[in-house]
Amino acid sequence: MSMKIIISGGGSGGHIFPAIAIANEIKRRSPEADILFVGAEGRMEMSKVPAAGYAIKGLPIAGLQRKLTPSNIVKNLQLPFRMMRSRRLVMAILQDFQPDVVVGVGGFASEPTLKAAAKQGIPTLLQEQNSYAGLTNRLLARRAKAICVAYEGMQRFFPKERIVFTGNPVRSDIEQMSATKAEGCAHFGLDSQRRVMLSVGGSLGARSINEMLLSHLHFFRENNVQLIWQTGQWMFDRAKAAVESAGVGEWVKVHQFISRMDMAYAAADVIVSRAGAIAISELCIVGKPVVLIPSPNVAEDHQTKNALALVDKGAALMVKDDSCNSLCLPLVKELLESTDKRQAMSAAIRKLAVYGAAGKIVDQIERIVKQNSHPER
Image (cartoon, rainbow, N blue to C red; front, side, top):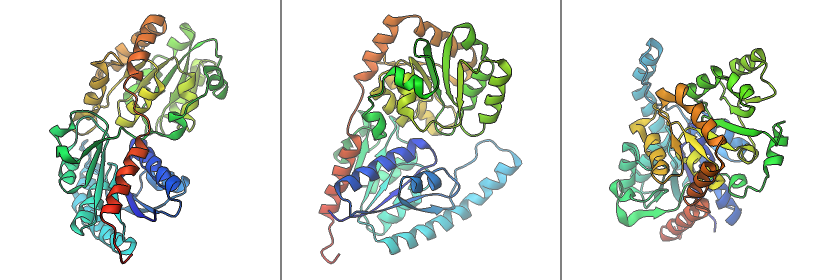
């Protein structure tokens, strides 16, 4: 099927990787499909999307800065002007590209893009990743042809007749993961006979998790536990220097960004992670014991709600962000010392895994395109 599709959103890996998974599935089915991404200038989608082989247009849009420093106050004052410029640019992009459907995956660019598309009568599809829908997506859903969700009970937020349960798209290398612990350990230069903790604070890093690890580097040598540590950009140099200074390089492997997450998951015995929706979808498929530390810096505290959806089923443990420094590693140690606990958590989290989400979303895209096909095109 020949289609022209805009996919809009980004800001973090949790929005970008699902968007790319959807695009890859479209291309797998319809190599002639024309796909354009619309993202936010200066955000990671502007490099990750072209690296995946897709064109992208950037909007000068940004989010509200909650920490009111002098520079952030200036940025907040600029927001209305950025929004107006973004709306004008989106209108021009839509006029030029003439998409059959516009897909929103969340992030700064989704709101102006989907709103403008709906105004022009272009069908839209919304992909809601979280268990608690934010205000923006609740408003955008009013005119969406389909709302693809990853959690049950989403009729609290959206019209029931347009909700489609698809799950969240995850990277194909994780959905089809086949690497063994030995292979994962070899990839990171670790000893496969020792226990391994993986720490991922999302693609952008997590300050509280990083600070906790910095202050407890001795834990890994003392307990003979190895650590694969994704720091994000801002903590990378400091973390590398601290590991070298503490003499724990044999146990702690520091990475700014882990491109082979399948190998990292394969190596891990226990995982410490933020509770972003896509991270949780991946963790359910991976099926390893996990300690979730929800970010407090997200709208409507949706990461805590995501985490509780697992905790309530015995599929994860949760530590509040402000208790991370004192409670996280004792929990990790407890898990590493109890095979029974790890096996029970693994069994519980695997029951929540959803496979083939990208394909289910593309089914909906194709349905919308067929229903709204233009004979003149």
